[in-house]
Length: 252
Image 1: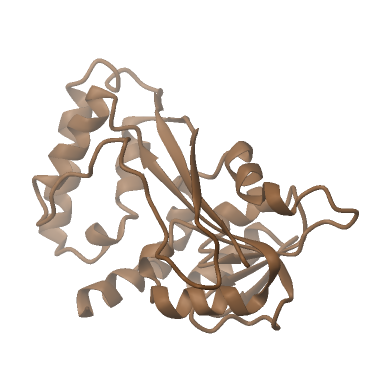
Image 2: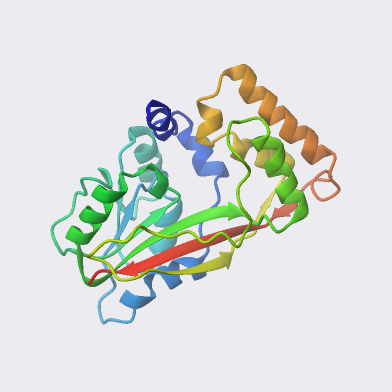
């Protein structure tokens, strides 16, 4: 648990790199997440929880006003500087700074795994109006692509976790009496990058941020060597085939 807390708190020191290198979210994924609350005369009231530097916030603004909730001061400062159109406030998924039944949708991008799920679900249920949306989004590599699977295996060989499952692995939310059964979808989210850009992106991941400097450099060096040896990634700019997964449920 101490390691989990250290990882969750590791991003603020690299907030600028996180904002620069981490991928955003495709409009189609956010629109699918919000579809049940779109189409009314007034735009939906939206909450981005664990907003980080505003990667998801930026995409949500196309659909309505967004309050972005983030506990880390460094990430929050970066969000405010980059996305002044959003209302950025300090807070957590377990204690949301919102009134009861005051929002139409609560979205979470790349942060659900850091939350106390029981408390986060209870808080989402409290602030959502009946029929409102709770949606969780992830950006991940398309592990059906051989060279992508290969670079992930290189990194996982240097840490104490098994490689991620293939793209048929379906994320799900825990059952909760306040929410209906969830639905899920997947959306292409290709990103143009370079070997240096991908190395920099991986350098913003929490397990590397808390690693000893020597271990961190060994992992990033192994990734550089792998990318230099692959025809798909060794000759300048290339397309990283990301996929955005979305799980959506409705407040009863």
